[in-house]
Length: 250
Picture 1 (cartoon, rainbow, N blue to C red):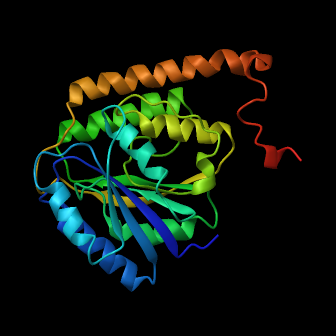
Picture 2: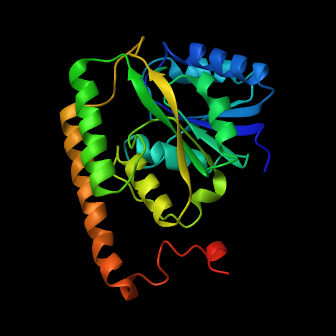
Picture 3: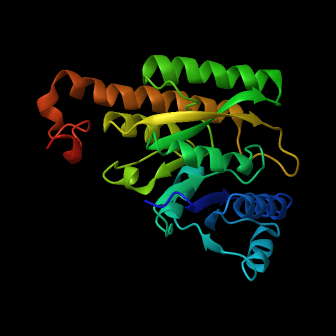
């Protein structure tokens, strides 16, 4: 697997103020680190100039734009975007510039040790309320409930494309991350992390209602764990078991 080639999947909705700067930073990072890349934008029916800006950039850089076809929410955008990735290494990153694309090369290097590398929001330049609610969710639902020791809702991840095989993802509109990581962990894919600085959004507005989304994520995490709790106890109900990857059972 070539670790100097990467497909970067970016879900977008009304991000006209951030697209140009995001692409500039990705391009600069790629040049400085000798990376061959593509950026795949999945647009969730933007009503501003997001699509127009992306189409213009696609005339000069390895960028493609696809209009989302499935149900609402970021999760479906990501799942559709992964299908268009042409390289064996995939990165997912938000378009709002809260996650630094400059962290991607370091995360790529970690793929020598891990199958999935998560950006850990060690330093967060966001409101105190949002910071502690996010950390509380990660601790209660990520670590205690699902047994995940990484930043469970981080929007920046780098992983090997083969991880997606047979995961059978069916997330809620905003529940991609914990389901992806939990099911990958059950299949014994190795998960690591790299510390990053998480910044406030500079342009535009968030598409998230934090109270509604928080309840959705909490409910989804509990539902997911309960689903597999019975199968963990009565293993014959889950045969072959999700943790029994064929390449680990030879």
